[in-house]
Image (cartoon, rainbow, N blue to C red; front, side, top):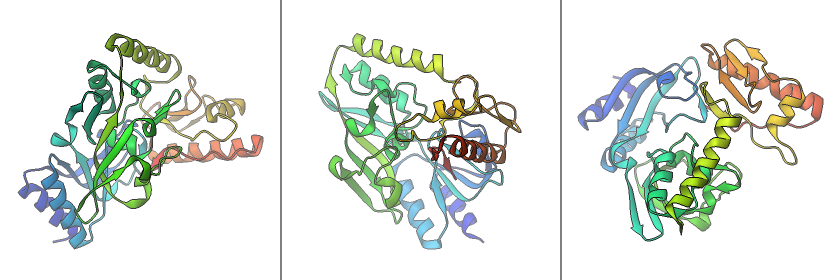
Length: 301
């Protein structure tokens, strides 16, 4: 019995939804990716702790996948275990008049809507970002001048050996599309958000405005992973790509969006290799013609 079988059997005994050879194209916003050796939905902390301890004991590789909205899974798949937080990890609750706890597996949009209904402002900018709360905290997601660092009070996690911990805001190491969780190897299980009281209708109006802006400028009608590149200092990635005449450029089924050059879309059954090749060609062309080195925001698994 190999390590994958051990983890799969452990998950089944814990009554998790465990699947062998699950296509990751079903679980990414790009609709791209080969099969994972094991795909497991965990619904509570006890299950997660036991599976992580089992992975640690038998040296099984694992990754955590949220909504798969900022990742590219290789065509050959993932050799190891993929974990998805579900059940209890999607719970959202009000701690006090201005404080919300949200599980890491909840959709960011669900948190935004919960805050709006409670008359709490500070998350409007995140309305329409298609990730989970855990993913948003992990990468300090932001848009329209707002970022997770502005509203996160503390973050709960579990270590790769199955121990529980928490990090307060001052120690989260938030930066542009990064946090301490990019380095410490811990799995985010939930976060506490400190917001401000406001009129629910006004909050909704701001959310609608941000969503309308996204719909007008972004290729939401095609599978994608959002903005592919980080914003270079002193410029904008999409503008540089457009300046180089790369809008509409295609490799296989992957295309630089004609609506927003900062997006690569899955136009027609694109493969991960199509996307990788297109990313490389964009980076080379932009550097050759403008001198800017574009760094990927997209995570290659």
